[in-house]
Length: 381
Image (cartoon, rainbow, N blue to C red; front, top):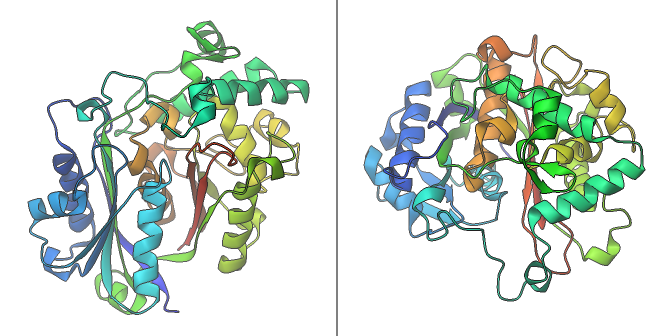
């Protein structure tokens, strides 16, 4: 397989934009990615685009706005891991030698979708969802289990405080406001012990990444960002999950990525991950083997995952501060890692970052472990 590099990244603003279409948001991100690397739209040979809601030839709608047409375009849906799936799809196309240059897009316009202003309904076959196992309810149960193992509500609040602080340093974050632990704990209760400020908001936005073979990359930059690993995996049956605080699919896909990249967890300099709920971030520390099993709380309390710490996690502000345009987030996490590896992350920059990891998971399917799918990408300069 050929070595693949990321040479261009772009992101729209994240927020509530009911006057903008998904095609408009996606085109903004793609234009930014093209401008970032100086490549012509005519050089794009393949595109993969992710969108979860109201999807209909999304890649075609986005790319016609930037003058890209007449190429292979693949539209994917994979819940919150849709963007990660899109990125992996383009990576495979180039690594396999089928194409030399491609673009991965993730986009979501929640405020113009059929579910705008409504709860996301469960599928007809989702028995657990119809019985009340919503995302907040599930993570609240997990939080209670974490508290039995030594966590506190203050720990969960600290994740939110950390990520909202980071979001204040990110011009593209939806929310740029500092919060205290008391602010988080005293915000409206959603599902005990999960409060409003421990939940990410549904958001409109898009992100794009241009990938190419290393041979092509060297024509455009002397410092290409290498994709060391791209791994994606779906979940096992729920009964195979021994502890709701440990994600077998999350651990499995992390191991796949570390093995593919030839790196160890201790080699990772920063992580962007799925933090739909504040307590979830602590779980993912352990899935990604950033600490020993059961060591997530101590890792948080030590300050290691803050900006300037040993292993900054979600220096962008994460989903909690940026918001979560479902299919865009899996590409957006890659874009943030690329910024740090280039040394272009501004006030939130991870010093001397050489290797970064982008993780995303999602999906809730009856009888399958949550998330139903997980993706991990490891990049290096």
